Amino acid sequence: MDSYSYLLFIAIILLSTKVTGLMTEKIHMPQVVGALLAGIILGPSVLGVVSESDFLTKSSEIGVILLMFLAGLETDLDELKANGRASFVVALLGVLIPLAGGYGVYYFFFPEIISSDPNGVLKGIFIGATLTATSVSITVETLREMGKLRGKMGTTILGAAIIDDIFGIIVLTVIVGMTDPGVSILSVLLHIVEFFVCVALVSGFILFVKKHFIHTVKTSHRISIYALTVMFMMSYAAERFFGVADITGAYFAGIMLCKYGVRDYINNKVSKLGYLFFSPIFFASVGLKADVRGITPNLMLFALALVAIAVVTKIVGCGAGAKLFKFSGRESLAIGVGMVSRGEVALIVAQKGAEAGLLEATLFPPIVIMVIATTLFTPVFLKLILKNTDTGTAAEDNRLAAAIADPTK
Image 1 (tube, one colour):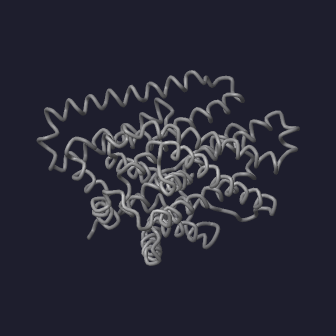
Image 2: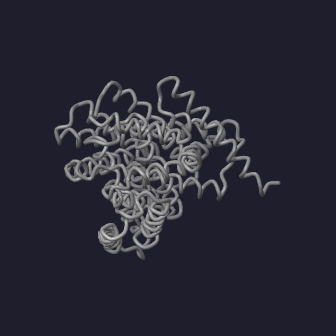
């Protein structure tokens, strides 16, 4: 019977995420908030009726890959190019300030480890490294629901999040490399350069195919299959050969296809696959990872301090970066809030730190609490900040959002 329990888990997750999503929509909050809450309620912290499994983990990974592919597909390349410098500065400040803030929190709560453990300083820096990560998938879904994904602000957030990923990889590699002499920082930087060379080569190949082939099949089911093939291959290559996050590969796969007259067709087909099955599992899985049973009062205080620093440092760092490039006060605040969510990226970083001996098992629950809190914070406050604003493309984005939120309509 247990071998078939994943079928029951899928049914529970799909139904509960839809119900809670509709409930949060009734109170004028994004549906993604309801999906995240459903995961928390179903998980070990509350009811404990759904447990993580390899199947759910893999399905969740596919969900976030599809989500980022669709985000790349909807990216306005002209806006992305125009805001490249702003995205870089936003990402840089969004890494340096949280890194310092995380170290400060660790030093305040565990000064004895800093002073007595040979790797104490590295452990403190590593806590800061977990705060540098940005999981833009939640922000992407929220902006899409509100019809504000395209435009200067949305593309700046997306661009900054991708650059943030690269900075995060470098920071993580440097820290782990200090404990493992077998890791070469130079080789990591070389792999990142090689990844972008790969992106350029694949883009050139797609351009060649487009001239001779894509226009003949752009209304055929085949083009969606080809698009998914490119997405999965880029995701695999990013992780396997270049050490870059698979969601970064998926995002660039979407960007490669966003200018060839097939965007809307692919979006319509692929979004049904993601939003009917894989994406609800991804959003719920973030909540399923929360297990705060047995956490001590001191660790709970540490977790709360970590949440506060995680929120403030991203808003201050990324918001200040946006302000430098003449964004309005509201837009700068929205960009800062949009970069707050840590999501699965921080959990992956934490796991890597645990494997390297830089994160004690007792500190994993506070990291999870920080992830859940920042993931819930982002859509709620983005909704409040961007209420009654107009990006100039809201009507089109709202049309896409409606189709994606409920493809069966």
